[in-house]
Image 1 (cartoon, helix red, strand yellow):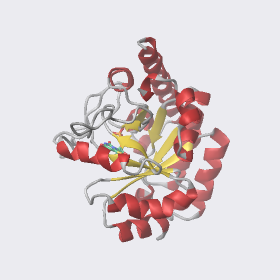
Image 2 (cartoon, protein in one colour):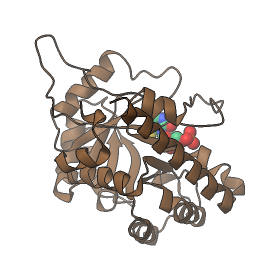
Image 3 (cartoon, rainbow, N blue to C red):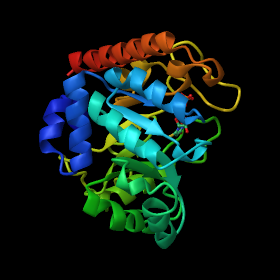
Image 4 (cartoon, protein in one colour):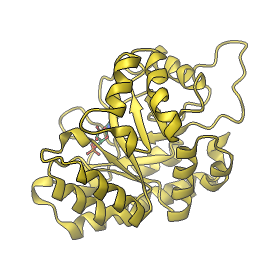
Length: 277
Ligand code: S5P
């Protein structure tokens, strides 16, 4: 099983350039922490990213919530990704017909495919959402995550839907690099009589991670890095408010302290998981 190998071992075998880059970065920086920077002002966005940059393998963005967006913000974000050695994941959650998602991914104000190494999609439209995005992303060496599960209370992404999401990924392993999910997806979607390819290696990136609280009053549910990485076998913890706190009163020293704390907690949980090999 892929997840019982080290991140570095998995990097050498992965076929997708974005997945390889992510696994190499995790290993080099000893960080399986992705920080989700859900702030609405460009200056705060850049300040948080410059602060947490040394501690993360990946920065997750919602570029459409930035109120004062200008194209130069992308140049600055890209410069920070090179300065601090992290990848960029635009959490766009595409969910439309193939033609529309290809346009949303490549064009408009944000031109996501030109700068985001990784993006994600809801499987709800069926395989054409992957085909549409792959037509844009594959030539650029990008990677796609499918939302097989969600962290929210009452999510509809469960059971047969999750199984079908995994089958969709298996049909497109060059472009689909993994899942947003709450646990490993190994063995999911395998029909009677089928055998799962033993070389299969989908990355599991997991939001809903917090060390201090269990929820946010709006349906979000938090688990600890130990539960997510060691017990559930996920690969990357995605942490937002646990790191940057309240965007209305950003405290750079506290953001740095929390990024360091979550990086360490995520890495300790990985070492714990590898102990059990
Ligand atoms: O199921 C999900 C999927 C995602 S991508 N649950 C999530 O919370 N997310 C995203 O992760 C969400 O859009 C947000 O950007 C981040 C979690 O933020 P936090 O502040 O609750 O850690």
